[in-house]
Length: 52
Image 1: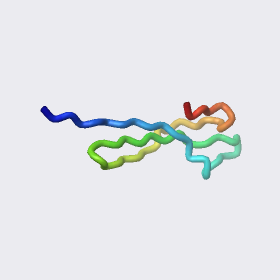
Image 2: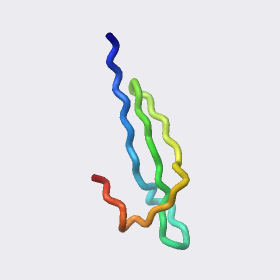
Image 3: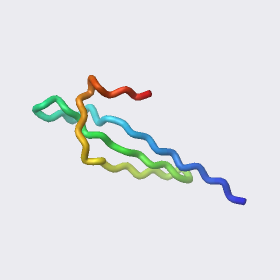
Image 4: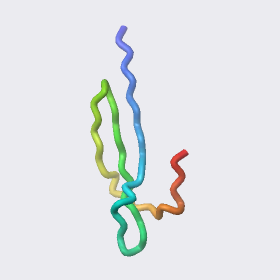
């Protein structure tokens, strides 16, 4: 039996801010030690974001 782990991580790209002080929300998928990262198309104010 083959057990492979898929990890999903959501994070803010704080280096990019728009005029409304919002950052893009990004998603990172990790499967078999390979990463694919993409933008979700959502913008969030960093003071409302909690990494936990």
